[in-house]
Length: 168
Image 1 (cartoon, rainbow, N blue to C red):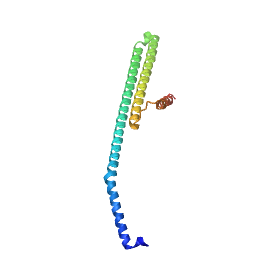
Image 2: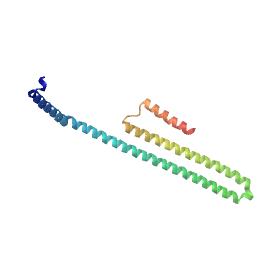
Image 3: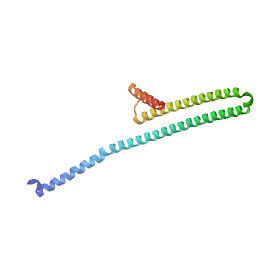
Image 4: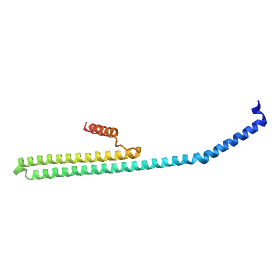
């Protein structure tokens, strides 16, 4: 077998090593830098997107905390109104008991309606902000424009499903 002859084998091994070295040099010189640049750019973009998503999540949490604080304040205010109405009713109970009961009931109903309106307003604000933040985050993360009709329909269906689930 001529390929195992030392005269041919030495030449074959030499040219194989030379060819391999040239191939490695060409890959290192021309293929590796663009690949590394692409990987670094992708890593940087992913890191920036994750940072943006984290900032948006923190902002959403801050808005939620603010809305909860406003809701607690509305509850405290309503409780204070109820307490004041009750004290006033006790002071004048002997003279105007029926009149005071009617006033107290009216004030309670108004306070409950006010609380309900404030709660609904706060929930609507939270939903609107959450939808905006979610759309912005999704748009930034996916690097897509979510304005075509199919995507808008999917977003509306998802929002309607969440609202329906909260009503139950």
